[in-house]
Length: 211
Image (cartoon, rainbow, N blue to C red; front, side, top):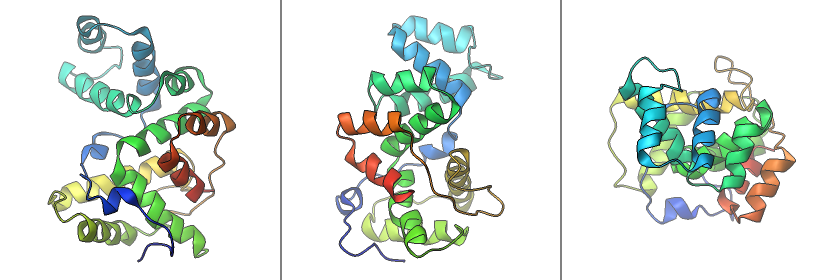
């Protein structure tokens, strides 16, 4: 598997850090709407902690679990602006899901580059599916370009791949996680306009790879 001719990937070329935090969860839309609402309120640290750990607004089984999920979603959302937070909080399901997808791409080069390299190539080659083997091949590409990326256990690699495929399924790029049949993404106008207005060229390029 090679990069498309004439198409550069600065995140790979600049030897970025690939992290396993995409394994912390998929798009988690109900929880993301609530976290976006908290961010828009601008809560101080104490009030944030009370909402997540004491009031348990995310409805998790333990304070530690609630804190972990909230921290991941917050980290994703904080890569973006309040305008996108509003789309997550108030948008219809498709808009909110695509907004979280955009934030997740910005937050995780592991997810974004998979779309930009692998899924793009599958569409360009008129392939109808995204085989599981594509994930292992992709990680080999990443390691060849970023030799200092972490050495993950096989179980972690499997979990990361499952979450990436699940995320693609959540935004309907994959018909389902079993057949892994590819479908084009119809990115919503609200999402594109928000990304364009804030110069999010990398995220836009990833979304365009799916169109």
